[in-house]
Length: 466
Image (cartoon, rainbow, N blue to C red; front, top):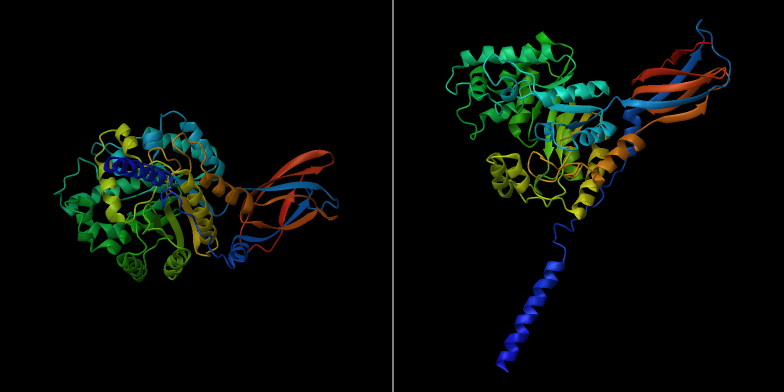
């Protein structure tokens, strides 16, 4: 009897284990509750769109008094929808790299490229071209995609030859030379992070760092950033310069922005990273709006510079996440990084897509936001070793990619197929940006372009060959 009972309990436990293993993990069943978006679409229409009037005239400037069939299409948003391509250091030369780039080019009008000092000047005084950077530059220019450079200066990308004990007086000429080199060598890069994460240089975990020591010698983050900005504006005044940081919650970053304004420092935008690899770092609707409102008070444009939402099970907090991050740092090869990488989960891919739909829609509706940059295009070699890409490891689109493509290329897009009125004019409402069009006149198709900007009341006058 006892033997039979042991047998029964043994098999009951076995089937119990199988039952629970068959249940989806709580994190795998995570569902995004749609955000309440009161007023969002109205705000988008108000701040991202405006009335357009086109008046077609002949070569003498006289109106063409005919109803003409025309097609008008938004070619490039004024708003910058970007993607970080820093992971190209690992993807370049790998199979399907062109597929990865092609998918990025279908959706985004901005790419963010890393110009790390430790890459560009491996030997002191010898600046070199990095193949994957040059390839991405050429690719972006050929497609009329805007380019952002990161960064002019950063204490986390120090060349190995730089002496950690060097005096700040020795470091400053090197910094000056680097900034001028980047701005003069790459005129096509229109946006730059200044001193990236300058507030971080004074954190306790930054030790024996010559760039951080130089920052302290200048008087702290704001004073150092003011100096970098001054050099940048002297060298290339017509670029967009961003004061970027990794945490909107850091009170020192807010203090720094106040101090920059007090000093009269020239900079164009405040950059805020929103990497959400942990549950604790994931922003709710109220938290995202509060973030944007908190930084809107500085009167600068807001760039959400590094957005990450994984479709692999998220870590609970930084404490849980840190061992994984440290392991990645110590990986001896790309193959080791792939072994450590967290795998995407199909149910979490739905969560990622639905969350990003709400995140992007709310951010796009805020009047101070001018740029949104999703940080990792692909799961393959994602910077934190998670599945936070928009493509999977084979560079095939995940649901999140399709959601962003639909938002940018369909929901927030303008295409008009219609006839002009009898005076050769046509009016409609459209998103701000660069337009291309075609029109039929006397049986011949002619093309035209125009740029739709806020506040323009006069019609666009478009001359046609008559």
